[in-house]
Amino acid sequence: MTSVKGDVVWVLDFGGQYTHLIARRVRECGIYSEIVPHDVSPDEVLRRKPKGLILSGSPASAYEEEAPKCDLRIYELGIPILGICYGIQLIAQQLGGKVVQGAKREYGRIKLTIKKPHPLFEGFGREFICWMSHGDYVEKAPEGFEVIASTENTPIAAMVNDEKRIYGVQFHPEVTHTERGIDIFRNFLFHICGCTPSWSMESFVEKAVEEIKRLVGDERVICALSGGVDSSTTAVLVHKAIGDRLTCIFIDHGLMRENEPQQVLKVFKEQLNIPLIFVDARERFLSKLRGVSDPEEKRRIVGEEFIRVFEEVAEEIGGAEWLAQGTLYPDVIESAAVRSPASRIKSHHNVAALPKGMKLKLLEPLRNLYKDEVRKVAELLGLPKEIVRRHPFPGPGLAVRIIGEVTEKKLKICRRASAIVEEELQKAGWYDRVWQAFAIVGDDKAVGVKGDERHLGYVVMVRVVESVDGMTADWAQLPHEVLRAISNRITNEIPEVSWVTYAISSKPPSTIEPC
Image (cartoon, rainbow, N blue to C red; front, side, top):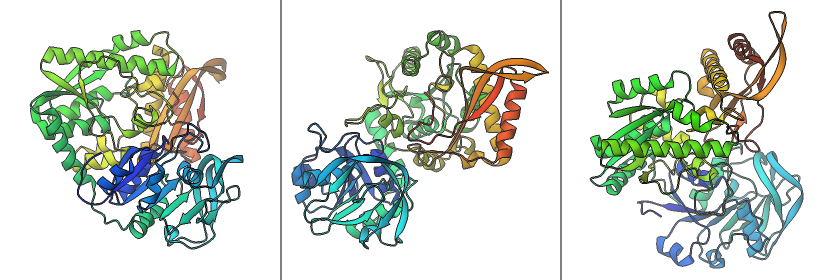
């Protein structure tokens, strides 16, 4: 927990996948937020004096004996509390209400009806669309609570106790799919907690530079550079703090996008003027991946091999004690690598897939940020637009966009098909309108007709999604002419491909990357 000037709101972490997204929404409102353990002591709360507490979601059920709980004395401190999803259920369970498993689960967009006006919903009409993701629900509100909103399957979608200053909503205002969800946070922060805005990305940059200087001291740092906005922003931020005691290392692991190594080298040598070492490790990585089909094992192999190469280079250049990398919070939360009851979705190569016994100390200045926040930092630091607006790309690269074993043939198909997808989106003016766009290749094949002959070729799946922060996403409803152009080019320009499909699953229940 960090000392900052101005008002602070704490998010109690019960292990929900959106926990950090809640904190991010609070920061969007200009209020500094921190995620703290769900069992933080009331004495610590009184000592640090946060202006409000928000109870996060959780994969647990509030009525289970082993479910994560907060100290009951938290409810008696007089500090405004907002429970979200599991948070409202925990409030109900701990204060004498009843939580049960629902006969019908609610996932996705649901119409919510406001039954009574309240400051939490100030400025709202009678109905709006919210985002639900729950199997349990509050069947009975605790004594002293009033129900102020409901949905068709959730009679208690929001409840309040103004005397105790405790509030709860069953839906997720933190996700962008809840209409005006940010206004619910503003109402809680400003009308109920009485906060005053005082935090910005400019203040984050200033604080991050000071923190890097404090941590590193007079030691040297190497930075894992991929060329994406995360690692590039990390590099510029660390360089701003320690200057030429930073050396960037770009490892070509053979799993990059088309022409990516050349583009990265050009930007860092000609525009940013930051020391850079290029390592060609294509054969090394691809040989380790031969015969491996399990996605978690692929991530582990890539993560371990990255670290081994960095350690070798650090030893060659001498004196480097730190490894800086562009880890973001979605990597952390999906890998369940924080002290919380979160369940692991997948191991990110730079978090849970790091090898034990690594010699370098980690420096991760962006660890508490989301992608759109990083882009704001990148703009403040003067990074080129081509890096700032670049679509996210996973550290393991095309290895996680190839289902099954990584082979040279599938790599070639995936790389060219992904380039075609991006090129057509650029032509149609859609590239900057979507979050991510790429192609996926597996082992499936389908019969086609090429040159009047039967052709058994690979199936390429195209994935294009819209998102703000990467924690939730919807498939992009591209115009048919754009989809047609993508399909025609892939099947005409890549001889090994006979079919092209389009992925139309949202996150959740899917993830953005296939594995």
